[in-house]
Length: 508
Image 1 (cartoon, rainbow, N blue to C red):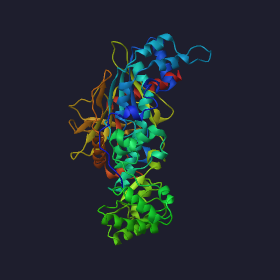
Image 2 (cartoon, helix red, strand yellow):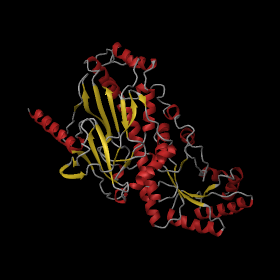
Image 3 (cartoon, helix red, strand yellow):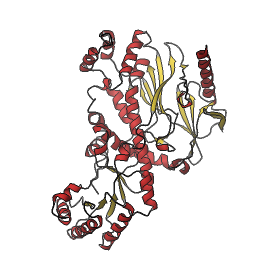
Image 4 (cartoon, rainbow, N blue to C red):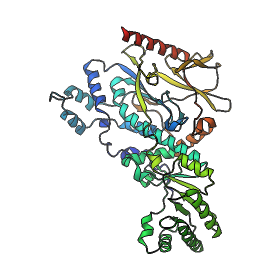
């Protein structure tokens, strides 16, 4: 169906291309209130206070049972590049408050002039299956540094995790058939197109139509021709013959410009001529109509012409639900081209990730937990410097994830009790020494990267491995079984105590 690109060549080059709009000003890739708070921290004399923030999400996307973590590599590139240039400072100096005076002081702008990100970051590796209310990223260090990166981290992790999850679902529905990401022309701008192509590959797509993503990220590229090619010629057979002469090694014919089955017959005739010239037709693409019925008839026509190796490619507003339905109908489709509903995550346009303060440490002191309470239970945060421990069955299947405070980790010689924060009567007990893995790994220490992620194919392989270990009931599209995520008993007690104390204080 198309050409393949060399993998991995430009794996670290994404910052200079995919972030073209802000690559010269990474410091301004934030919301205004991050900067106003940063100035406030300096003015209040608390800039030396350390803070711990966690990035998490509150509900599985697409009413599903899981999410696939993605976007970490771009987040690390941003942290490495984070500075404020002269033009950035001039712009900030030009901003005015509601009294007409300067919004930002000379002292604060001087602080930004020499700013570098010097905090610590721990994160879940890309391609890991993750769940609501557990940290994907932990940032700890000077409060100004931690605060300034909030927006960029959320933007990067939110979007790529969302698209990677959608891609995983689409590829699950395709059941082993290749899925090609076709969404650039419908993506949310140039960077949205690049980020979506990368995330789709992480989630399981085999290729992309986006040639820039192919160059930058080493993703294989694939594509056919458009209806305009056929319409330019006086007849469909003439158009196919001209394309076969021009691109004998990329001959996938779009057959539904006029009459789909007539188009398939014309493509088959040209495929036979290609074979006589020593080439092989890749296949035909159907972009409209009853894809199940048309693909079956197309398969019959191609097989009758001796073109059994030719593929039937389908596109046209596909998603996991339509692909699953077409599979159930016995559609003879070999390759799925999925565009708009993948790159825009059409049925859920945002992951809803949040970045919340959970602990502070004064100079020379210990970490002090902090909690945010809310009228909505789902928005109450978990205090502490949090880690995530995934308990495993003997065969490696994940059983449950436990969030705990790393300042007070579970005693390794005692059984561990995990409590559902939404229902304290629901508990799980794991024996001391039960098989487990820590999900968060060190990626930045003191502003210096200490983690080198695998190349993109390795991340995609991790996604496949992680999904393969997940129970099928948690991967189904309709009413998936809920994967257990809870709080370690001590962390739950601290959270409850702080919530009660805060609510009682509010009453007073």
